[in-house]
Amino acid sequence: MDRRDRVKLYDQMADAYDRSRPSYPDEVIDDVLGDSADTLSVLDVGSGTGIASRQMAKRGARVLGLDMSPGMSAVAERHGIPTEVVPFETWDPAGRRFDRVTCAQAWHWMDPFGSAAKAESLLRPGGRLCLFWSAGFHPDDLADALADTYRRVLPPGTPKQTLGYAVSRSSDLPLDFSVVTGSPRAFRHMTEEPARTVPWTATYTRDQWLDEIGTHTDHAALPADVRQNLFDEIGSTIDRFGGAFEMTFATYLFSATRPR
Image (cartoon, rainbow, N blue to C red; front, side, top):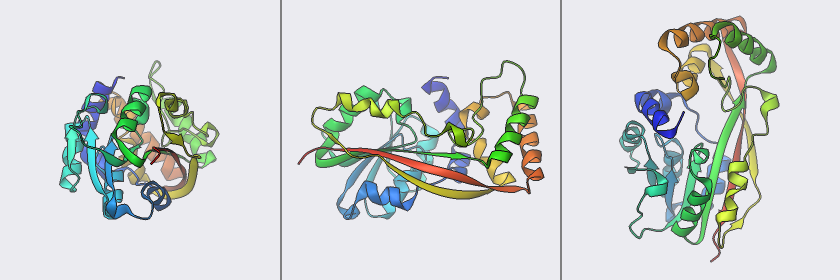
């Protein structure tokens, strides 16, 4: 599925995405912004409905969002995040510079080398490029049961589905971040900082999880009848495990600083 197809799906589910997708740990946002958030201008690339943008704006940062989806951008605007609807790779900054260029959960959809070089060109001296992702998995026994459900329900030839949040089970971690670790080759002057991992958990009821996975493009792209049957069976599986579960998450932060 290419980016244009994903944009169409995201346009259709922007409100559900904003309602159900998790925010990011305070430790990550604090690391990104540092001690003087109210002095910073931030360009949030792939900003979606503004989930990370709002967390930064609440700390006083002046945030501009960029996203390809008109529907997602409209939600961000309703939340007070000014957003331009355009791919980062072709966006014209019109001479603007920023203290932070951030991207939450989206850098892997872009050209990593061209985007890294462009981000560097947009940063003021001392500015940082900060890329972060969250990944989460079910308890192993529930993950096993859900894997059986997917195998039983989905027709042969269905594209592989991710059962959790960016991963299917605990053994899928750590994620492959080669799209990030290769990007610094495009830098001219940036200094990479040590990567950071922040663990956290969240509890989902049956209905909350069904709402959330409905915003995953691999699930949203399924034929409507197949998707409904799958979601009915996922719900029944979660009910057998008490109707709720605790998902274990980790948020990964990669950053680089432009020298002063």
